[in-house]
Length: 181
Image (tube, rainbow, N blue to C red; front, side, top):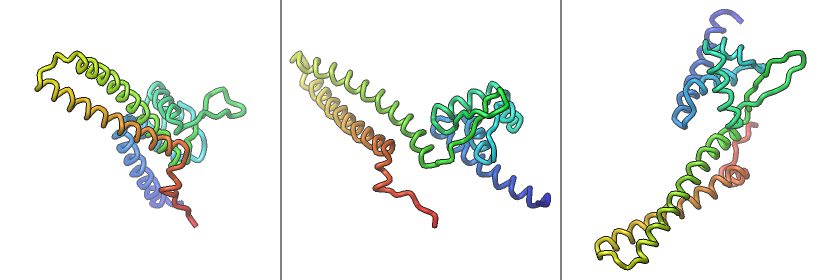
């Protein structure tokens, strides 16, 4: 490959890496972790933390934090390599599963937190309503709040079932993966 062809390849890869990193940042994954993911994407072999740090010009500590985040999201896995004591990491190339893992973890966490808050708040409002000591105006506001919070619970039930459909891959029955032929 001549130098111009090499530059075209590198520029195309860098553009994709930067775009992936920027978009992952929108979903709570730091830009540096997104850059690490993108860098691993274009490797034809596993990498050590030292190799990642060298490739990105970042510290081993930063690479370790980024890899741990990506492992928690099941986007990167640790592999054993014969003849070396250093940990090696490689990317999960299943973009569909990466999406499912990234969003399921984040959606499920947010969903569970919000359901807990809604249930606790509803319990308090039902107890307040039961006192029978509310002014007409306050009783009306309590009813409106209860109605909206119950709507929120219905939404989070739906969101939980949507997450389930991603995790079980049932979603692909409705939105099939495109097969390349």
